[in-house]
Image 1 (cartoon, rainbow, N blue to C red):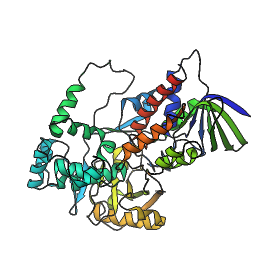
Image 2: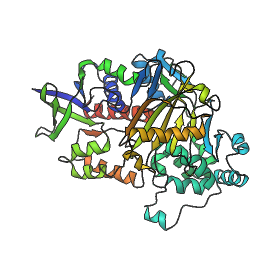
Image 3: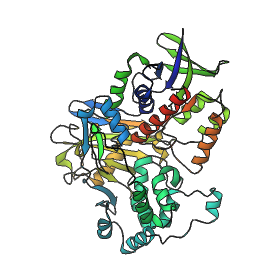
Image 4: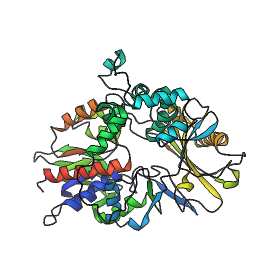
Length: 479
C-alpha cells in the first residue's frame, strides 16, 4: 500500500508536531495538504517527558519554557490557554559558591552589591561591559577559524570571575556543555551580536533595544502578555502541549512507525518505507522533513547524502541524568523560594544544578513535600553515563545534603532518567558544519532538516524554527 503525500514529517517531538500544526494553520484551505507525521515510539513529545504519581508531577526532559510569542500562540491555538502557568520572574536564582547559596545578581545594582564577586571582579566586569575589551586575537583564535569559545569570549569581556562563577554554571544549566568548546555565536548568538556590533556589551544592548523599537503590529489579544524572565509550563506539565497537538492531528499521526529506508524517486519525489505494527508500509511524498536528532538523521541520510550524513555525526550529544527526588520540607535547611541553584565546577559538587520544582509551579507535590529535579553529567562529566541508577541517586543525594538538606534523610526517588545522548553541542566549527549540511541539501530539493541541533535548543526555538520551516515548505509546494 503506497500513500502519496504533500509532506512527510519524521518525528513527533515538539519540532515535528509544531511543524505539522503550522502547515495546517498556514496552508491554502481551498487546497488542503496531505500530511503524515511518523513517530517510532508509542507516544509523542520526544524529549518532553511529563510523569505523575499520586500527587507528584514532574518532568524528566525540559522542565519549563521561556514564553515566546510563537510558543504561546501555539498553546492558545491548541486550546491550552487556560492551562498555562507562569513562575514569578522575581523569584531568585542561586549559585552555590564557597559552601553558600548566593543569589545571582539580575541587575546592575545587584551586581555591585553581590558577595559572589570580589571588588576586583566587579570592576573588571564593569569596565569590560562598557567596552574596555582587548580585541580577540592570538594563535588559538586563528586555529579556530576566527571563532571564539564561550570561555574566551566572556573572559575577554567580563573577566575570569564572572566566567567561572556565573557564566560556566549557566552554560551547564542550558547545554550541559563545556564552555571551552561551545562557540559563542552559535550558543549565545544574541549576546555575541551585541558585543560584536561595537562598543561593548552595554552599547550593543542599547543599540539592539533601539533597533527593536521599530513599529510593531498590534499585540494579539488572545495571547497572554508576559514579561522577560518569566518561565512557563502547564498545569498538567509540558507534556500537555504535544498531546494537544497530537489530538488535533488525529489519524495524520502514526505511532510505532519506524523509518527503515528513505530514497529519491525518478519523479523527483521521496519514497519512505516504515516498519509498523501492521507490517511494512510505504509512502511517497513531495517533501520530507527529518526532525530527528543529528545522529539519527545521519543514519537515515547515509545512502542518500553521504556528505551531510558524515557532517551530522560530528555534532556531539553528551550524557545527562535527570534525577527527581522528593523530601519532606522539614528536612530542608530553609524554605526554598526561588527557581533553583546552579553549581560552578571546582566546588566539590558533581551535580550541575537543581530546579526547585515544587516552588515554581502549582500541583507538583503534596502538602509537606519538596520536589527537586537535579541534573548531573554533561560534556565535562561524561562518565555519568557509565553509572547505575542507584549510584547516580547517591551522588545527587550527597550533593543535596551539602547544599539544601539539614539532615541525612533518605529521599523518595521519583525518577532517574539517563539521557545517553542529551543536548546537541554547538561546539567550535558548528556554523561551518551547518554550511556543509546546507550545501549537501541543495542537491535534494524537498528534503528538509528541522531539529534542535541547528540554531537553538529551547522549546521556543523549536517552535520558531518549525514555523519558518513550514513557510519554506508551503513555498516549495506552490502555496
